[in-house]
Image (cartoon, rainbow over the protein chains, first blue to last red):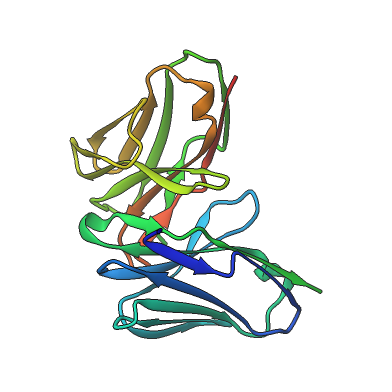
Amino acid sequence: KNEVEQSPQNLTAQEGEFITINCSYSVGISALHWLQQHPGGGIVSLFMLSSGKKKHGRLIATINIQEKHSSLHITASHPRDSAVYICAVRAAGNKLTFGGGTRVLVKP
Amino acid sequence: DVKVTQSSRYLVKRTGEKVFLECVQDMDHENMFWYRQDPGLGLRLIYFSYDVKMKEKGDIPEGYSVSREKKERFSLILESASTNQTSMYLCASTGGPLGYTFGSGTRLTVV
């Protein structure tokens, strides 16, 4: 079993829909990261969370430390949100353990 | 903004060549990392460094070495490139409000 599990693996939405990506982890962490990677592109950090909720534009990230679970929400989705979203947890030594990623396609 | 710069976006090298991948960050971060990314395998840690001249093996160090002579520069070295090292290589450093900053990646093809 992977230490970081994401669901779903793939997601297709119509423009304007609300999207949720889930991440569960099994280890103790100091922080959880949500990352975005567009096709052929580098990786961009979206959020770093250790508790509660953060919002940036149309993106919202939440974490429940007791349940070892985080969600990334995209409100009013747009075709430019089409990307792979990766959950990663930071444990000892600042090393990241990555989830398998969720491939999101938003159709116009 | 923190910047992590990888020297090449695309590289093609021959089997057996010695290959250097360079990464420079401009924010005085102590921790730097090299990952490779492969379809179906995700991101895997090759090596990391928490200070000048310090290095630690990650999950897949075989066939690679690293050099950190200056704080801002972390080099990944493929001593004798092989076709199974064809991959996307990503450098990262830790620091700032988002915690991790990645470079734009180097897509290496070994022929």
